[in-house]
Image (tube, rainbow, N blue to C red; front, side, top):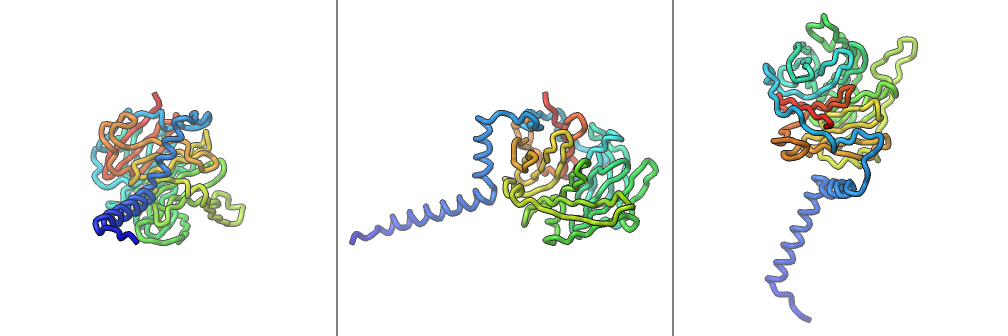
Amino acid sequence: MRRVHPSTFFFMSVLLAVLVAAGFVGQHYRVFERTWFNLSQLWQPAHPDGINLGEYRAVLQGLAIDGLEDNVSALTFDPLRKSLFTVTNKKTELVELSLDGRIVRRIPLVGFGDAEAIEFIGENTYVITDEYQQRLINVTIDDSTRVLNAANAEQLALGINPLGNKGFEGLAYDSVGKRLFVAKERDPMLIYEVRGFPHDNPQQPYATHVVTNPRRDARLFVRDLSSLQFDERSGHLLALSDESKLLLELDINGRPISTLTLKKGRHGLEKSVPQAEGVAMDDEGTVYVVSEPNLFYVFKKP
């Protein structure tokens, strides 16, 4: 029986270890799924009803929000005020922004814990998440609002898969289907659909339903979720990933159909977006992104 030379055995062992490590890294970073998706885009036509993120280009990038030093953690568009809202999670406050990234006003938040997301629900109505305690907090904001206290607001505590600061990171709302999408950052990475909150009909009993879509979530070839946006026109969902530096469009069946890469040299970006934490889309299809600690981006189709 022929003996294997020690150097050959060592080489084969190292090669096997490298292959195993490469497979682990590839799976951890979802390299294989993302590569296959990118290749499939070469022969697949653009979705006729899609947002088609690949066509977007940065028209404003890396603008420091003047006067804001705390970490911004979310973004939502108010179609009535024609402005944006974000929350900060160090000195906790709600900040209204103009569509070109200027501060309109700041509202202190009391009792909101680790505020990580905000979503416009209807006129003067918003939902804010407390990531650590996994609470959804329904608040009213009008021109006279100077401070918000969570103790005075309708709240829903879900307590699903509690895991410190890897909880609720993003919100999106479907006003037609009355669905509130809630993104759990990771470990595991999930998107919940919450129906019945906020409770908008006092004539009906309070009933909240939470559902998941494992098939959709398994298709998310990103490492984490930091924000969500629902597009009323197409019925598609946008999912933002900080660690993967990617904005992903999902169709009504939860299938990825287009991406916007937040890396240098892509979509007109001169530098990579360092830590994307919030995404919003206005009624004209313009996409807005905020990055910690206070950078502002705008993407439009040519």
